[in-house]
Length: 388
Ligand SMILES: Cc1ncc(COP(=O)(O)O)c(C=O)c1O
Image (cartoon, rainbow, N blue to C red; front, side, top):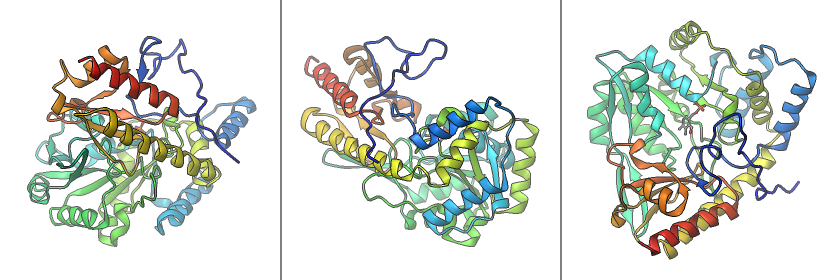
C-alpha cells in the first residue's frame, strides 16, 4: 500500500496547546519532537475500534503484549529478552527519572553527554540529584558537523556517577553510537559500578541504510547493568499516548525500579498500550519503512538546501531521528539564532542552549513534516539571512 506524507491535518485545535497552536497562523513550528505526520493507519484503526467499543477503562500489560515486545527485540536485534524483565512506564522520561531516583544520591549523580535532549537536564531540577556532564566533542568537515565521545573525560566523570543516561540514537545530533563506542562506554561504566540507562526512544527511526545496536546486547555483564527504555512513540508518532517500557534483566534492579515506580501510583494509558501492541506486532512495518524513506529524503533535501543556500550554517547528517542540529556560530545572529529565526523568518526551532550551556549558537530543526512545509521553512530562513 503506498503511503503519502504530504497532506497533513491541522493541529490548531482550541482546547489544547501544542506545537502548532502555541503560535500565530503565519508561524511554521519546527521545534518540539513530534511529527506533523499522522500515525500509521493500522494504529488508527485499532484505536478507533477501542474508542468505538465505548469503554476506556484501566488496562494493564498482558502476557501477550509482553511476548509481542520480546518477539520484536528478537526480530530487530536478535536480543533474547525475558518477558518478565519488562516494566511499563508512563513515557521514557518517566522511566529515566524513576531510574535516577533508584540509583543516584547526593554523593553520586547521573552523567549526560551534551548537547543532549533538554529533559535530560531537567532530571536534575526534578529530583535535586547531582548532574555530571561529559560534553561530546564536535568535529567539523566542511559544512558538516559530527560528534565524538571524549573517553578520557567520560572516564573521569563516570567515577563520580551512579547512573549514565545514554541517548542512543542521540537527540539532537542524530548520532548512532557504533559497537566500539558503546562497548568502550559500557566497560568504563562497569569498571566504576555505574548503571547505564539507555534511552532508545528513537531506536526504530533510522535513516538511509543506518543500523542500530542496543547497548544491552553487547555482553551478559553489560546487559545486567543496563536499563533499556523503549517506546513506539517516536517512530510511530504517538508520543501523546504516554506509554513506554523499561527492559531490566537484573532482578534486584528491576525490583527496586518497580517499587519506586509503584510508589508513584501512575497508571499506563490504555490507548498507549494499543498503539504499542500494533507497532511491536509489526502490523505497521510497511508504513514505518515508507516513513523512513520520506524522512531520509527530507534529510537529504535539507542538507543540500543548507549547503547551497544558507552560507554560514553548518549541520549534522543525522543517521536517525527527524532532528537536525544547526551550528549558526559563524553568523552571529542576534539576540540568539532561535529568536532571530522566530522574529525575522517566522520559523520556530528549539533553542540550542536548552541542550547544553555551550550550545547557544545552535538550533534544532525538526524535519518530521511534509516536504512542502520543510521547503517553506527553509526558504524563509534564506530570505531572512539575505536581508541581514
Ligand atoms: C531522547 C528522548 N527521550 C525521551 C523523550 C520523551 O519521551 P516521553 O514522551 O516518552 O517521555 C524524547 C522526546 O523528545 C526524546 O527525544
